[in-house]
Image (cartoon, rainbow, N blue to C red; front, side, top):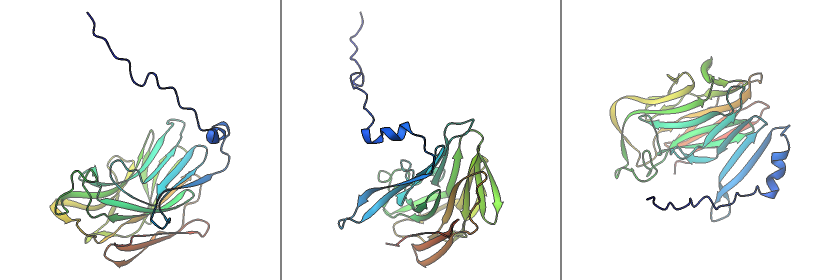
Amino acid sequence: MTADIAPSRYATVPPLPCPSELVSRFQTSLEQPEELRRVFARDTLGTATIVGTTWHTRNACLGSVNRSSCWTQRKPLIAYWKTADDPAIVFLARFLHDGKDFASMGIRTAQKGSRALCLFEAMPKRGDWHRTLDRPADGVFQVRDLRVRFELCGVGATAKPLGEGRYELAAGGHRIVIHTAPGHFVGNEIVWTIGEDGRSLEGICYNGARRSVDFSSRLDVTLCAGIELLRSDEVIADHAPQLTQHAVGSVAATWEIVGGDVLRVHTSGE
């Protein structure tokens, strides 16, 4: 005797057709780089508050959102490219608390083309691994390790220092060049180092004995980096990002990139 087995509810769902306005994008090859911007949220006055930017070529792309958190389900700064050995090399920006993605840190990003300037900030009244479910009532987290992590995942991914606060994450014919700037996290100097996996760059904000860090209000943090997605033969930017701190939690960053353009991003301290 066999039990009746209900058919899958997905079996009768017909495939969704590609929207007609997008068909041509899949039928033509992208010969020149293209940059797209999309507004995800506006305030009550209609001003765009959350804006996504994507730059892409035939085999590589870099995407960011102007403001987001480092919650595990957020990917505020991400890149992909293709190599002969791997169809999807992936670059990610993360912030970790004791090795896990930390929802109480955020990133503000300005992007133009294949370059992005990102500025990290503490976010009060958020959780630890989840945005809300594991939020401490007093806003105080117990930490042994806090660090920002720029990682490259895929076959043949490597990391190395280039000198003068610059680092390279590479695979195949493309690379991410990261320009760091001196910074601090609640009195601790940021220490930049190649990760133990040999394919990431880590900015260590704190590593040591268990201590309390109060995220119930804005923290004294200055932490930023300039990111370039380049072919192996492309010239990297000459300048490092510059930071100006106006008050606790209020920081401005600028970065002069190739071509004389300047990227700017700031935290308000609100």
